[in-house]
Each structure stands twice: as C-alpha cells, then as structure tokens.
Length: 214
Image 1: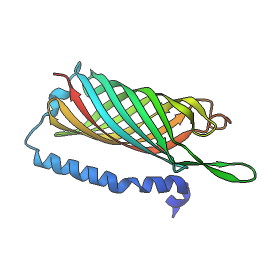
Image 2: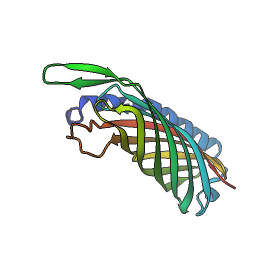
Image 3: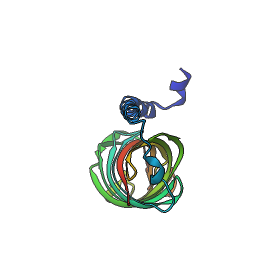
Image 4: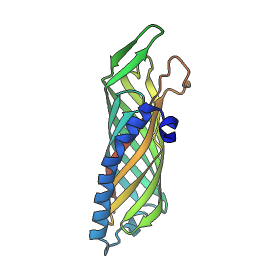
C-alpha cells in the first residue's frame, strides 16, 4: 500500500505496461544465451577504437497523458575506451495521442499528431559481462524539432534526455542485438513551471541492431 501512495497513479499505470513485455525479452535473451553458451563472440566487439553502426526503434509512453512517441534512430559511433561507446544519432519521431489541457474552469483533450527530426548523442558503458550477454548503462541527450508545437503550448525546438539500462546479445564478433528501457524527457529548458514549457516525460522501450565495422 505504501508503494501505491508514493507513486502517482498516472506513472504507476504506465510502469505496469512494461513488465510483461520486458519479461518476454529477458526470457528470449536468456534462452538464446543458454543455447549458445559454448561461444564467446563479444571480446573483440568492445575493444577500443572499433567503429559501430546502429539502427533501432524506440517507443515512449507518457506518464501523465495518453501521448506516445515512436522513433526510428540511426547511429554511428566508436569504442571510446574498452566497454565504453560514444555514438551520434539521427532521430525521426512521430507523436500520437491526446493531451489533457486544464484551465481554471474546465479541461479539454487536444489531439497531438506530430512529426519531428532530431539529433542526439549516447554514451554506453558495459559494466557486466555474462558470456554473450552484456548489461549496459546509457546516458544520452539531444535536440528534437517538431513541425507543430509539442507538447501543447510548448515549442517546436526541444531538448531530450534518455538515461537507461539494457542488455546486449552478441551474434558474432561484429553484430549484436540490443533491448533496453529508458526514462525519456523532452522540454525546452525553461523550467517545469514556465508557461511555455509543458514538458513530456515517459517510460521508453527500445531495441536496435548494432554492427561493428571489421
């Protein structure tokens, strides 16, 4: 009961959408790992100096709205140090759903269908190795330009942040598939209480294919 009181209902509802999907992903990864436990492809992948290319999808469910954001992300980067990558991305994003706008007298649902282009960077650290599986921690941020103001009464140009965690599974020395979860934030940097900065926050799921240049 204490947990329900500590977490707002809108955030709790969003969080409850995640476990079943994430458990399916974890089950698949563990099964794949056991079936291929005799191999250890990942040693060369994370050596310093390697170049990497990635293509991935991200889905973000908003905490306090029915808004969702879908992104296609193409990235290029390098192994900055062993087990530490730095990458830059081109992001193509689509938003969908309704945003509840409240006034002193009433409230209204505003449809938010939008398209955006952005760029971002990502630092990814692999602190834990489990054979072919690796656990990683992400720190990332960037900018996103949408063709309409987003969220409602916000701005077209916004900053983004994506701290997250996940698991990478290696197929061979040069290819891996990634699954993860992040805490997505979008705002124009004017502060939560600014009238022109209705920030968008949500919980994201992402997956990508990462290829290391030979």
